[in-house]
Image 1 (cartoon, chains in turn red, green):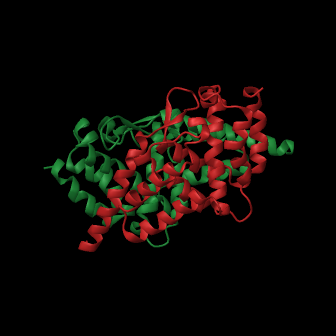
Image 2: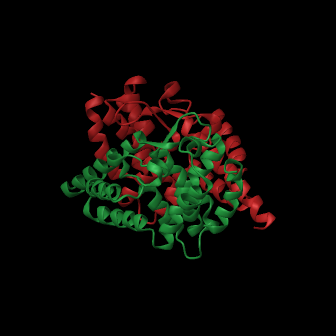
Image 3: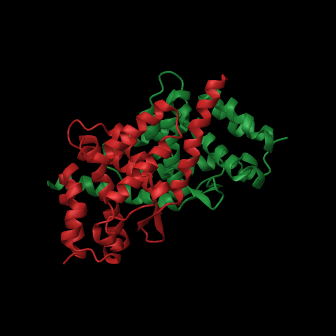
Length: 198
Length: 198
């Protein structure tokens, strides 16, 4: 192989080996059986599977392959920043300016391990997810919000109990985001959550 | 929502909730830092990321979006069957007739949770991966073989030491499969493994 080909593979694997660390970042949500906290690597896999299986909930024109790509990389910045639970700090930490700045620096470092073409491509997809303005990103965000709801339903309340979440907080922090990309899905899921929010 | 829509969502989530159990299936390979064994859920995520980043190693005509779909679902049968390590039982257990029959029954059950259209689609993709005859499946298999090699290189030998693997066994059980879908990649990786197989 050429020296250029070797250097490219070195960069591709520098990134892929670094990505392995996402398997050690723990989220607030547990597995469905409540046995342990979920890590952000397996969470990203589960979300990509959600996109495959729930494609019929997306708005017309959403490109599911792009949504999957987005979901596979969306949490890599947590290798540096950690997971910031949506209900922590009274719901104020998740999208704070400090968190966003730290995540942007993490994206510079982690995607910066890649060859330039891949770096630019994946960074653009990550920026699109974060901005949550395109139909693909809006649907990806819906799935990212609905998966922990399903885990909490399976595990008996999970983070809703841990963080004393109210029905209004669930609606504003979670439901409104699900409904934006997948309105029928939130209608159906909201009904299932009612038993925890009387 | 209509009753039919409700029934469809129930089936989609019966599958997605069941899939969560793949996060509790442990593989022989450890994380790159050696801290614990990898589970098959996070492994599936890492492989999908491999496909994204190593797309330029695939033969012309390989559809990376289909490869990713294949990799996201390829290990779900392990929920019933467990992971059968490639180097266990002197390399004979992994593709035995017994293992294959058990995996086929698991595929019937697990994909059978889905609505019919999704069941048929994902089962066909899984069959294609198992048969390993199409360019997409051959490339997906290459990635499934190369990822544990990279983990072993990072962790200091890993399963090669645990199972007393020889250079010839690595070539026949692993290298030949990587080379079939990504020949340049195996040339490059083989060099890195030499220090463990003198």
